[in-house]
Image (cartoon, rainbow, N blue to C red; front, side, top):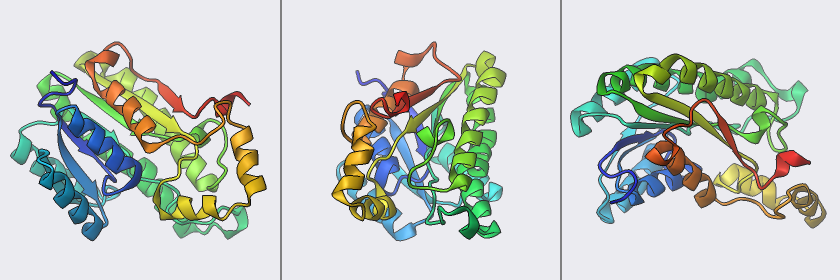
Amino acid sequence: MKRLHDRVALVTGSAAGVGRAIAEALLKESARVTLNDVNDSLLKSTFDELKGQGFPVQAINADISKREEVVAMKDQIIKHFGRIDILVNNAGGALNTPRDLQEIEEAHWNLVVDVNLKGTFFCCQVVIPEMAKQGGGAIVNISALAAHWRASLAGVQYTAAKAGVEGLTRQLAYNWGRAGIRVNAVAPTVTVSGERVQSLWEGKSEEEKQKVLSAIPLGRLGTLEEIASVVVFLASDESSYITGITIDVSGGRYLR
């Protein structure tokens, strides 16, 4: 039997990139998955493709930075699948905002913090009571190495938001462990995912790329599948005595 047989998962920001890879990895372990994104056309395309492969999926367009939309999404999942066993808070990123401190406007700060941190909070706040009624569940928040080190492709608004995600992870794990709810985080380093990061990476000179790679003991960038596999582990019973931690998926980059 697969590790997540018949469990119900919600993966935010899952129309493409890391989120899609996570959703596919959960589906391959026999979970039933709700895809979520604000990009309706991309979400529909991903849903059609995965549904066409016979996977048990549904898709919900919702903005996680708006609590009322998160509540409506939760209600729809409960109506469709009957429960929520796994929550993966993946939606986020630098969201095409500036890196330079003096170029960061209030709107940039609000956008990044609202999606990465407030959105993660709303999803946890809305889903945790359902998990508690069921007797437990697993939450995996997608952080970043930048949260406890530094960012190379994003500004301070991103590092601050992801640091908040890790603080939220620890506090929720402490508060809800006795309800059978485990809360952990995964912190990748630079992974070529999405048009923005792809463009930034490809725009670097070979010398700049080698400088980044030389700082990674394993000597290469990570893959989407490598991030997704850690999420599956934290969502499964294989990690049943693990809560409140952040696992770096960074090739050892933090060591240097």
